[in-house]
Length: 233
Image 1 (cartoon, rainbow, N blue to C red):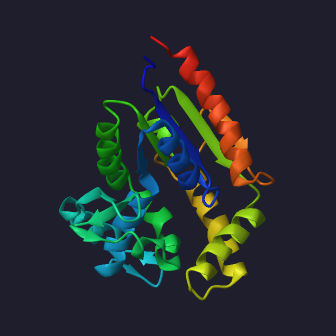
Image 2: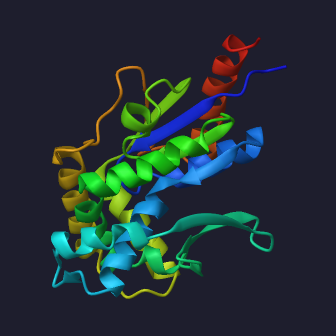
C-alpha cells in the first residue's frame, strides 16, 4: 500500500494553484485545502465589519476581533467541491471580489492572523493524504512535506487569466486594475516580515506561462507518481 503524503503547492497569485491542487486531490482521492480562501474569508470579515476603509486596515481594532472568527470547509454535494464558511455563513463567492483581493495581502501579513490559520492548517494535515495550496505551505506550514511545488508565471499572463475570470463572472473590471493588483500582491507577499512568499529549497518550480491546464496536470502527475513510488512502505 502506498504511503499517503502531504503535497504543498505554493506560488504567486493567479498562477492556478487552487485549480491544480484540486485536480491533484481528485486524482489521488486526497483532501484539498484552499488556504487562500481562509485568508480571504478573514479579510472579508475585516471589510464587512468596517476595519478596512479606503484600502487602509485598522489593525489594532481588527485583531481584537480575531478570536471571534470561525472558519470551516463544507463539501457541496451539488457542486462536488468544498466551500468555505465564515461564522457559519457560506462566503465562497463573496471572497473572490476585487475589494477582498486588494486587502488580503495586508491582512495575511499580520502575524496573529497567520498564527491562527497556520495552526488550523497543520491540524488538517495530521493524517496526511492532503493537498494544500497557499504562499507558505512548503516553507512554514509543512516544511517536511514529501512534495513541494512552486507555481509561477509572467505577471501579464496571470493578469490576463484573472481578468478573464472576473469578466466571465459578470464583474466590471479593467485589465490595468487587475495587473496592478497582482503586482502589488506579489510585492507585499514577497516582502512581508512574517512568512514571506519564497520558494522552498526542495520545491519543484512549475512555470505555467506557456502551459495548458492539461499539460501542467500531466507534468505534475508524473512528478507525483515518482514521489509516491519512492514513498512506498
